Length: 67
Image (tube, rainbow, N blue to C red):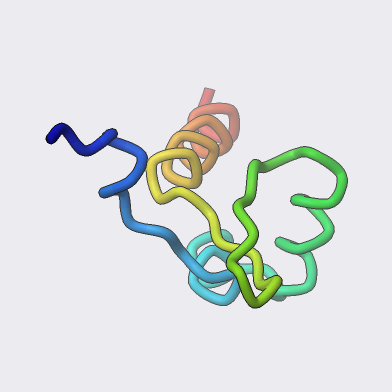
């Protein structure tokens, strides 16, 4: 049986993402609601974010700031 890569990827909480971007967790939730960053809903209704997507977005923003 093969496990899909996305099934093994680390999922981050809004608080963890907020720490990386140095913003409030509610800001991360607003970004997700606006479609700026993809999110997954847990069975309990909480948002989780794929680490690879978060890092790609962060790398893009830091490249813009230094470019």
